[in-house]
Length: 374
Length: 189
Image 1 (cartoon, rainbow over the protein chains, first blue to last red):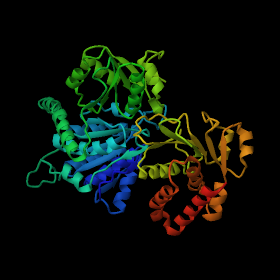
Image 2: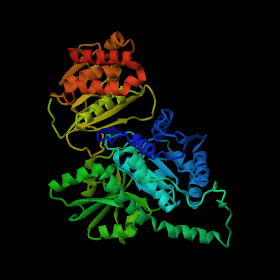
Image 3: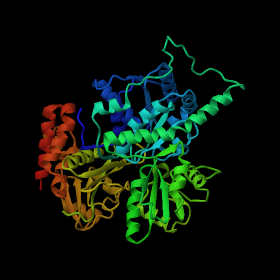
Image 4: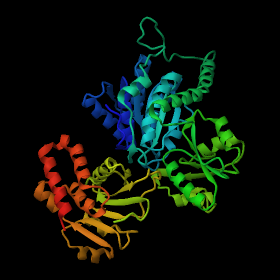
């Protein structure tokens, strides 16, 4: 394998390619649109003898995550992928994976949730497990999917928490774009051999996973988990810095685009960020000072850094690709909490609705009649 | 044909299963091999074969950041002429821009039917495909016509890319036939 600088791949392919370079021990697979290309392409790598991952075919996503929990607890480097209803169905076991502190990596092609049925992209599914104890990393394009899959695997094992690497269903998962990969060996050296500290198949040091913990200890378990979750951001930043050394590509907890002198700052995640940047450049030509905070790390939420980066902005505009009921939108409420004041909150792109630069410019200029980029 | 903006934009109109996405990807990969930047993505409602689909392709000399769908195309390709009955395929296509369509009909008949004043390039991709390949593969055949009209990627790059993607899958003989069909569509008037 040589480093190929002239690739054009979909986000789904990019995820499968990163996983191929990692070559995990176990992958549990169950198809669902728009995630299916990831496991399809990976299965081809396996059939062609390019990876020796044990692929477990299961009968539902609940089983997929259950298989991952068993495999990871046994001591194997474990991955899976899902979307939408699949993620909802595995929800019970998603919480268990986090509680057991299992470093499972899951690629998610984020998609709308029923009802009504819709197979297209938004962030409703992943917002449904934002408090589950999983790390959540968002990607803008196939390049980021490739890079953050590798970063995510290393991070999961370093902090002993499961990690979701999230791409926008269709907008990123099915979009062919230029990207570069890394030499197979460089990725393997970067991720390193997985050596779990405690695992079920360690017969010399027997341990129990998933015992009952009642009134006298459950609380402490959960508190420990919360405390440890606080340390993830530091480790994420360290791994991103190391990754920059091998790839030349820099990722942080968020990317700041023209924020420095901006009067208005947009906050968003995922594939819409590129469209926002182009819209910002257009507004700049008209003399309007607008910036973008492109959030990469949504869980744990980097409150302090967000506050520091946004404190000068006269106006903060948050774009959510989810719609919550009876409360503020997921990202808007976090940003508002971080900066200690109200933000302008807008919802865009639900169920795969296209988002145009013109809508973004109208939003910034106060031209929209309500809070939706319909 | 010239860029009228920084990004050259193409819309493919087809039916699910006709291979518009594959055709767009072949052009995209060919452009990437020539050092260009691309973005290609499908747009459909339910994933169902036979349903009308749109595939967007953008090619530029600079990185493409925005993920907007294409609304102001430089070229439109139609793989199935029955789509003309229910879709305005020439939306925002100007008089100096081109429509490439898989049909046996001459250009003036298509122009009359859809009331389009721009350039229409009919190509009998089904006919060429049946004659040379022996199977209906209009999606790959029409690539030849596209290359000729768009002048945005080289024929050699598209053929090279086609071989890279398909030679393992369909064998050398079938690949050669497809390439011959692409070349014929390129040369067709």
